[in-house]
Amino acid sequence: MRIPELRIADLIAKIPIIQGGMAIRISLAPLAAAVAEEGGIGLIAGTGLSIAELVAEIREARRRTQGIIGVNIMYASGQFAQLVKAAFEEKIDLLVSGAGFSRDMFTWGKEYQIPVVPIVSTVKLAKISEKLGAAAIIVEGKEAGGHLGTDRSMREILPEVKQSVDIPVIGAGGVVNGTDVAEVLALGADGVQMGTRFALSEESSAAPAWKEYLLQAQEEDHRYIKSPVGLPGSGVRNAFSDRLEQDAEAFKPTSCSGCLKHCLRNFCITDRLNKAQQGDIKEGLIFSGAYFYKIKEILSVHRIFEGIKNEMLHYRKGADST
Image 1: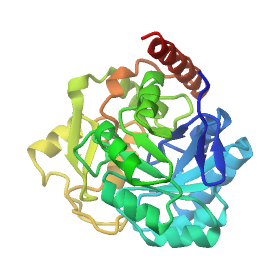
Image 2 (image 1 turned 30 degrees about the vertical axis):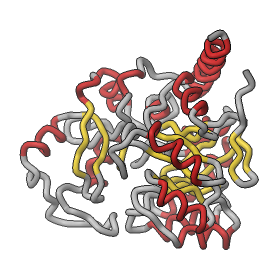
Image 3 (image 1 turned 90 degrees about the horizontal axis):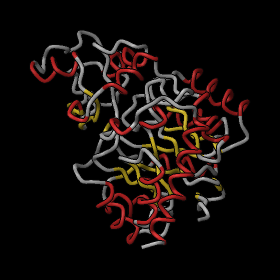
Image 4 (image 1 turned 180 degrees about the vertical axis):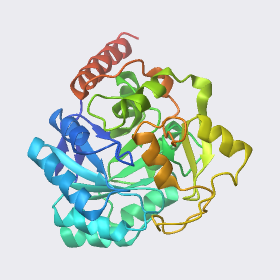
């Protein structure tokens, strides 16, 4: 089996995998560059970074690799426009954005001649994105980690979107190994986006305690929480999420830094994600895809890619024999 390439505008990824842009400070230069070096597309998560920090991460990733480097910036971020334009000034290879929808980013993409790839969960938004100039579409389902725009499975939505648009379609949510990659490609996807598997890599900037907690968590520990962004968030239960379920007002902030355009103010998401990234597994917000429990060990990005390629080949051999 020849592993297919992923083409987005003029970009060609030798392996059809985009690494999810996981904020806050999980997906930074070391992870994005390692993925790009393996032939995938590495994303730096810009949400929660200052302009100077984002620029520094992009430049460090460029220092480490000649591969494809993009950024993921959440539309709900209060600094969305400033972060996007700073990334464009640094001549990133592509922009990925979700947790809301921006028409402006397509205009900016055309101005800077940089591909824009929205994350959507409906055929309607996929069609709108194509008309506005999207270079590709990431279709995200309920299995994904972080903020979600649907309660449907990616594997249900993806074929519908694929039939509705003429640009590349990438599946996101519940993809943790090579068998998953092969199955999603068999549904018609041009590529996949993987987050949690790369969060549990050696190059991920999550604290060791964060990684170990996720490794030890059980399937029944998966939770959906009400995020201040106004969307449900997918993650793993801990002391913070348990108390939030019991008392929705328990963590209401007394001050606000304005990190979101619109905030429900039930808790400070930046503070809680920062706590988790730094290893406070009791009080932090631990976002994760729903199939985290399938991942059994921390591996280097290189070993993750080698495993994925071997599993894809094994899947194809099995399919050819039936």
